[in-house]
Length: 407
View 1 (cartoon, rainbow, N blue to C red):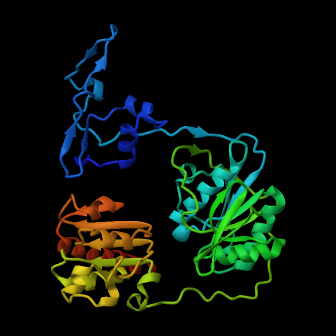
View 2 (tube, rainbow, N blue to C red):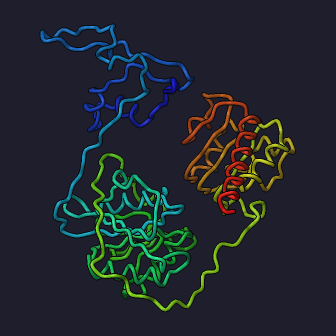
View 3 (tube, one colour):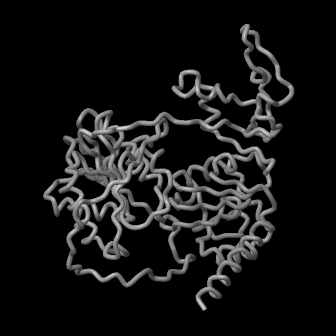
């Protein structure tokens, strides 16, 4: 097994916060060592040992109290309390975008809003079309999971998706419908569904409170406040995602199949687009280079091999390695990529502001204590040139294997 100690910032925060409901559970598996922000291993001298039968603390130096192993992880696993709703009084239906087959940050915000509307008596019903890759519905706040499969729902088929939602509406009669007001499908589907069931939806909702909802209007300069409707199209950060409980995510099924829709739209499949021609603000996969990139020719080859859109930090732009329209950050372009790969970028505050809305951030850097490493969801410590070369080789091998399998 690896000797690398991996941090769990959330578990560390719970262990420090005595008012947190999971603080006591964390003490049962109290940390004996953890990695500090500068990469130095810290030890807890008060965490070693156990309480004897006479109430006196004893120190065990044999390692038996630690499972007989000298290797320690950075944080103990936390078992969240299970929230169960055996007989739901009502349902709050959520239709997440599931871009790439997984829950995005917008989807989790939406489920957090649904959890607040459901309370203790209601259940959150997640409606997912087609196959998915998500395995963490339970920690996202889903009580019931309805997966609707079928070839008729593949590709761009909004009319057929509306028929599926109408079938769900007839069977479960949710108190509220929640969809993300996004460009990746939720906004259009929600408006089509509203027209089909005769509801007047609340759009671009950013807050729900005291039976009223607030939505953006006037190019985001005004708020419209109205009573809580049955159909809500919510904006990102409409609520805090679920983090303190886990849920059953029990699978349920439709009693009747969705009606077939005579589609007036023909899906011709995805169109190949040059990543270099995609605007930075609309790119889903961005690879950005910074001061730590020494071989820019290798950087360009890596972005082409990965099929990513190129970006850069201000330092790289000021030094002339990248054009000004590729600068990412508060002084450049604010990006909302699903995956943002930062190569040799230390993470100035302006740059971190510009990538604040990115879903997943991956950092490649030599400095384990830089701010970009702290912000990243996945970090690789090492020479950027060697790592980029390994990425190119891995992509080429994957594509060669795919060609051989197809032949």
